[in-house]
Length: 94
Image (cartoon, rainbow, N blue to C red; front, side, top):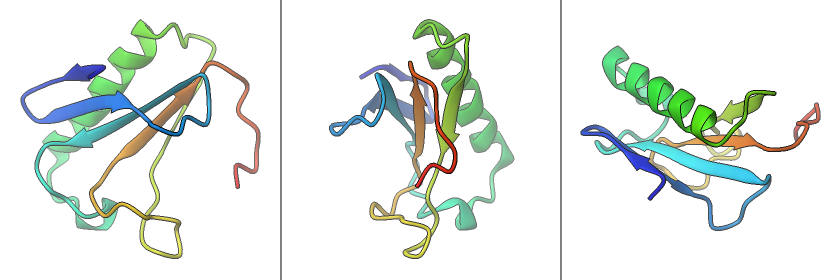
């Protein structure tokens, strides 16, 4: 476990795509960003992600991404954000 709060968890991805690759998720089940109806939960995910990025030394930048739906590349149907950093992120990402 990288970090946790009362409403969110963060842990390292088992298939990292960058030197730092952490998944940040709500404890409460939410299928995707399309179903989010709680701005406080989203705020907590943002705060936790910013804290992790700071703790991981990502002051030069980091990426925060989620996939929504099958066409968006979502394969795990529980809302999660990928916090990626530790190297220059290229664009386009896919």
